[in-house]
Image (tube, rainbow, N blue to C red; front, top):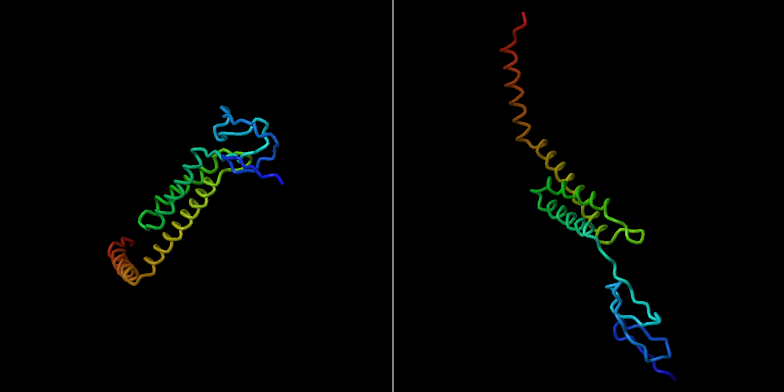
Length: 154
């Protein structure tokens, strides 16, 4: 029975009978450090991430953090929109955008929607508060008396 041999760099099983194979580096592909000369072992290629995809992720995270802090909801809306725009211009690699760009898009959308909901709840609470209602009644009475005093119709 033959013992199985494994590549020391990748951990994949070596299926070739020849044990005198040598390793070498490829200058054209920096992500694949070593391979066999006859290419019996395929190494998984690392995904390249563009700078725009990373910017999308960072902007999306900033949008969510600003939304959660409640005092920076306009900033959350702006950075969320910027994350969506960056996702739209992120180049596709092998027919799809990277996971970092997708995460940034999701965080940006969450930041925009959450901020709009928080602003809406805040405005509705102010409009329905009893203090605001009392101030509006007082304003209306003062406005009506002002109109009645300054009515110049003959």
